[in-house]
Every structure is written in structure tokens, then in C-alpha cells.
Image 1 (cartoon, rainbow, N blue to C red):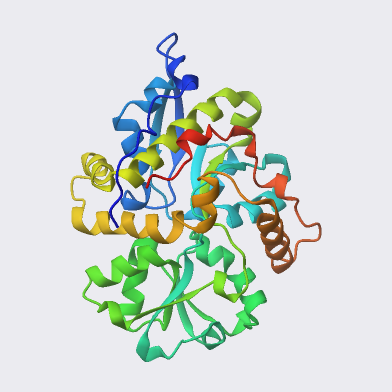
Image 2: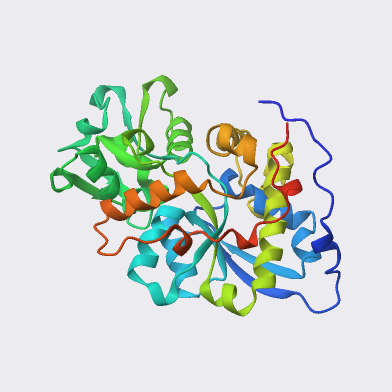
Length: 338
């Protein structure tokens, strides 16, 4: 997909007024994956000085998945993160005193899925029953699987789990130790094809297709930051939004920024991964119309109610307990480049 640049990346007045009037605020940010194309936008924003303009000095750390990222932000050990909003819902329901919030939606179509090879015959969610499934305990797909199973009518007790590190998950499938693996479609696809799997042999069973109207990853802010420094939340969100907008307009520049952080980056593969995310997760009819960052009230309310029921929450959460639109930046830097 070719994306041409538009004049949408001018410094917002909010950030321009920050200058260097005081020492930058050190913040800790948890990513939801190792350093790869899925988080290159943050490194592009950093390289272009947008966090510095906002008076922030972020420390970006990789993680073992959305589960770990959400726990880090929810515990307050990290100020911000990027993670699956549905994992956040579960965390907030169990830990209301330390509940974090999603302040900017990034993935408008959830990439959560089960990947299998054609030979396994898994052509529907129901076919996952009784199968050996590989997963990482800290990954969002594993944490959300009970909700998916409940909606899809899968008896989760029949699943034979194969647990391992997020970075080794694809090996389960390649070695034949699992019939399917759970994760983000792009992460699994590129991990499998890099290891020699044929694209035409890979099949995805998406959680969203079973009836979960899910959003995906968004920018998360800790309760401590939301209550103690809401202005920093606004500035971090705006600078990150500029990074995502720029990455959509210039994927190659985003991957170049990633490579400066991770010298062993496979540039062609990570560029293709970022383009995958742009076309399949970020760009939808909804985000084209509304811009990135927000959620539609009707869809999100249905999602929260459905996931709350599937998790068996005694008291279902309200949408405002998970997503807070008060920190969204201007429409100019939320608009998708064309």
C-alpha cells in the first residue's frame, strides 16, 4: 500500500508551548512485544523529537505481551504502555483500586487469533476444541481466550495447552507440538514465514469473527499518572499520536528508527509487518471516518458488555472504567494519511 505524506504533522500548539522551560519528565513505557515493526511508531516519534518537545524523556521496554504490559501499567511500575484493551478490562475488574485507562485506541480491528496449518483442519472456531494449543501466559490472546471460547461455544477444558515464551511460540507449531497457536495475526504470520512456512499453508481463526466486537491495542496510562499528572498524559498521547500518523505515512522511516534501537532488525520483514498492521488493524471504515484514537460508543459498549459476561464478572464494567477520551489530541494529528 502506498501512502503519500500530507501536511498533518505540524507541531500542535499544545506541544510547541512546552519547549525546554523545565527538565524533561522521565517516564517508563511498556511495549506489548519485543522491539519490532508493531512499535516502531514510538521510536519514530522519539527520533523526531516529539517527546522532547512535550517535555518528556521516555524509557521504552519490551515485554512478553499485552498481559505483562497491562500488569506493569496497572501496578504503577510503568507510567504508560501499549496493550490490549480487553486484557485491561479484566485487570481493572479484578484490581479496581489501581485501574489504569486506555487513552488512545490504535487497533480498530483486533488481531487476536489462533494460527494453524491447513493440515490441522481448523476451519472454524469450533474445531479448536480438544486441540493442542501453544500460548504464552503473558500474551493478550491467551488472557482473552476464555472470553472467545465462551462466545464461540468452545469447551475450554478440552484444550491441551502448550506454554512457552512469546518469542518461541511459533516453534510449537513448526515442530508439530501444537495444532494451533494464539497471538496477533501479524506476529505469528511473520514468525512462521521467516522460519520457512508457506503463506498459503497458514490459516487464522479470528476471535472477532466469533462474535466478539473487539478493539485491540491502545495506549494505556497508569492511575498514578492520570491522577497525579494529567497534563503529562495529554502530552505523551499527543506525541505518540504524531508518531503513529507519521509511521502510517512513512513506514520506511519508522523501521529505520526501529533499527537504530535494534541493530539486528530484519528491515524488509519488519517493514512488511508494519504495513500489515496499517492495512489490517489501523485502517478501517471507522478509523477513516473518525480518525485514530477514539472509540464509537455503541460498538465499545457492546464489546465491554460481551467481554465482561464472558469473563463472568459479577459486576460488569462500564465503558468509562476502561477507556477515557478526555486525553485525546486534536483531530489534525488523529487523521489517517491518504
